[in-house]
Image 1 (cartoon, rainbow, N blue to C red):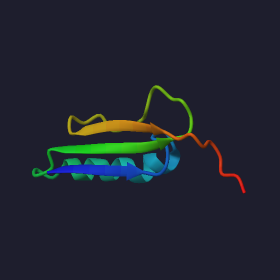
Image 2 (cartoon, rainbow, N blue to C red):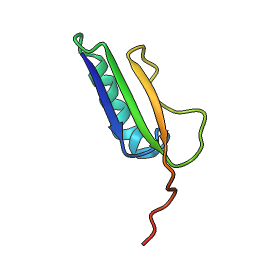
Image 3 (cartoon, rainbow, N blue to C red):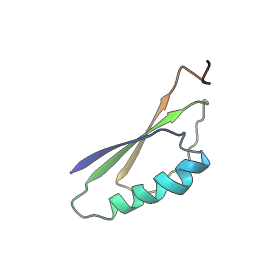
Length: 71
């Protein structure tokens, strides 16, 4: 089984580090999961990301055109 995991925060954000990364590792621990595709919404043009180093995790950064919320 393959899983597509969307994260609202950037991969280097503290909320991603404390909530998304542990869940990615838990998903990878299931034997029937062959791949987890993690899409993060990036608001800065980063080239390095702090995600778990696991063979089942594929990270795809999506760079948002909108940098800030305006009212």
